[in-house]
Length: 340
Image 1 (cartoon, rainbow, N blue to C red):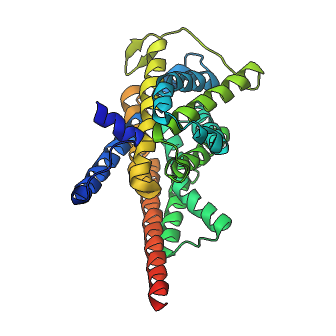
Image 2: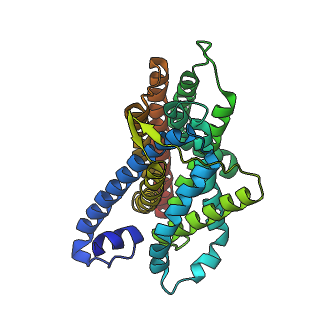
Image 3: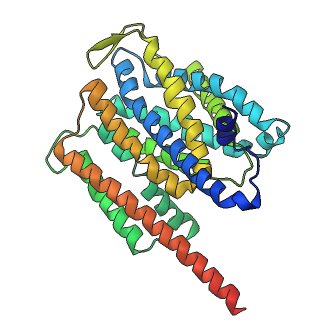
């Protein structure tokens, strides 16, 4: 248990020099394990939330309870990870606020608002165009021009998005649901970028805990002033023909799909970097569609599944292009240094 806690918190002992290779392999294995757990548990949230939304819960209320439970669970571990480094919270106040508002409260609220209006699978597929969006943002904001592989990947993702929305067949398109899913995509992009940032010095558990606390506080404040609907219900929920008390999916949402998901996701990002972590995070789409099928009997149409495959292929292309760009940049830097 102590080893697992050290792995998540990022506070484990430094390996001796003759064990660096083994430690590097262990770090990769641990990062992949954390990423798979994070993606799988995140993928469960849409189906569970849909069952509650169908009984009268509002998206704001579901997200507040989910984030609140997770904050209560993770906060003590985050405080332990900080120990005598509380100044890190003050130094990173802006980053923590952005993480709590965009990556925690914003992404979850937008996603649950989307699944209240459209099936879980298409909503997730729209959200997971985030890596391509990050590349475009880096191009426009920082001048990091993407290469041919990246552009091809972005084009595939765009075509896939059109198929997921099923606009070519004249099917009914819930515009509000699509807009909410795009909002969730912005939150997901923020999550990947901030989670993988190691320059702030915040331990993963501290970032997760502080972000969850900020997210819960923001949602609670919006509910208190009446800007966010906080409708609740004590009606039983039904999943795959089985009836559960209203509090059961809420507890699972808070403990499993938030507390576990965010802490393991940040731990994965720190060990794998944003590129590889976002690759593995694509499992959330598969898990989300699988849970929606098992719990809600929702399955995207064949054209939407094809679009989903194109989106996934496009994201892979985007990330491969990003890897090539990084390698090229490193090679150029080495060449300049050698010429001197």
